[in-house]
Image (cartoon, rainbow, N blue to C red; front, top):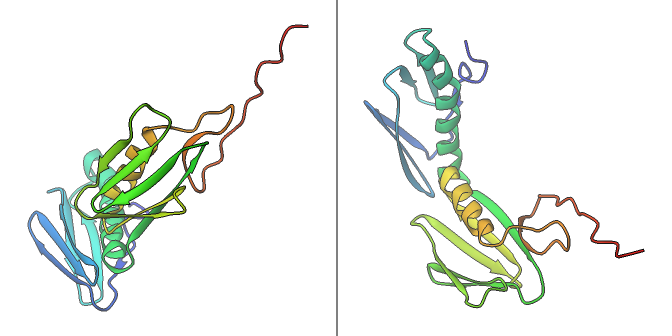
Length: 179
């Protein structure tokens, strides 16, 4: 039995969970999310909790047990609190600007990068060097932040580029010159 999978998911007030095989729908104050649940997994929805059970002890069922519980928990947290990733931009002349549903980035290339935001993602820019990526779908927030970071990843010599706020860049020593 999975240690993560056997724990029930607490449903806070204001959140509605409905399951019509194979689609799980979670609705809350921030929005609603849908996810397809594997056929090897059975859900028991009660008033204030959801329990995830597996049909058998096959490898596929065992591996999906804890994963499914975590995905459902992320859906519940997303529709109540939401998720956020913070990106920092370092470098002379590097800046970001939010224009509606497009994020415009100047990252030292010959042209600005206009990144259209996926549906359900909001971006806020603070002082042109901090980007807050917010949304209710944890997977989509992380994927969007990773895509933005990939435009100019941090380099180890001067530390220029886009990095996560909690990321630590290991710096390298440069050339020492001829002796």
